[in-house]
Image (cartoon, rainbow, N blue to C red; front, side, top):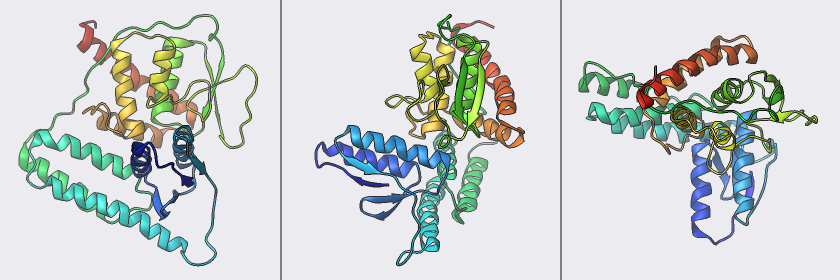
Length: 303
């Protein structure tokens, strides 16, 4: 991504810098950032580009190969160096930490691992440091699955029996959103999983968690949160799930959910074990049903 950010407002440059850091981009030049080619990195850059343009700047996204000067191997090493620096900070912070402080470090380790595109060597050291700290701090570790809301209501009629389209290789936000759609919005929903670059919108189809889709990220909200708000699902359990999905998907620690790491680990297992996207949706539905029941019981006293 090649971008130009206006000098004012001052916060925009800082905000964009942090967003690029969170998605794992490395600087090729002061205004040129790179990510490995792939659907998720592309979408990450598309959203950042939108923020830059909305802030009065300009940005272009392109696929590139190096002909002279910087080599691909050097760029890979730049990615590894950036992640090794993150892992070194995590390992240093783990030493001497109390058990109650380690949840944040585990979340940070998960977030860094998600953008460790080229298997930096520091990952194993950071993981071992956290495990040593946990063992020294306490003999038992809480696996907390916490919080939130109750029953939702769907916008019946207009959105019944529709075809809902999203990007293939679904993961956290798309898994959760598919569950939400089928359970609370459109029980007869049909899903299509497409290549985002080749897909062309078809009349009557509804896109979710896709760039410029009908239901997708809005402001600092993930798609799940957008659906909850757009369909007025005033349900504490759904809001809680939305916070978990947000923390996993956007990696901005907005809600600081202690249960996000455990939910993410379960979803990673589902993604690895499922044969295709439809299978992922079915398997993830069981997890989100269980989370919903747990949060509903905790927040409302209902079983």
